[in-house]
Length: 159
Image (tube, rainbow, N blue to C red; front, side):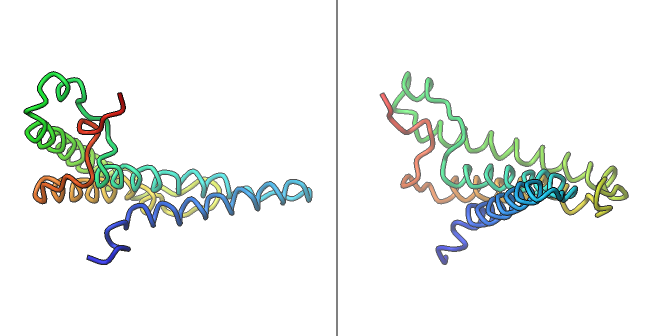
């Protein structure tokens, strides 16, 4: 798999963060020049939803979600099983959140528009089901691969 695809979530989140920073900087410069872009706050808020969900999926790929460290310390021989349990619980969470988020996007946001720009809200609401689908895929990928090169938090030692 190409390196770009391996880090798809991180690269997309980084690009969105650059866009948020550029919009925020432009807004500050415009305010100094006694102008204001009323829509920049709205766009940055909506892009931040995508950044959060892409970040959650990236953390699932890299093993950055909160783990059950106490259990692995008490029972070090069970680390492999605990890792699978941890990733399975995270996958179930992503699945549940993605289904609920998808239903809400279809029922609530399908007809809504943003306040300042009048854009449809559903593309931004898709951040939840799409981010959850990516996170679920990364959890399943880590469970199937059994790859220990990117340890979860239960396997790191920071003592």
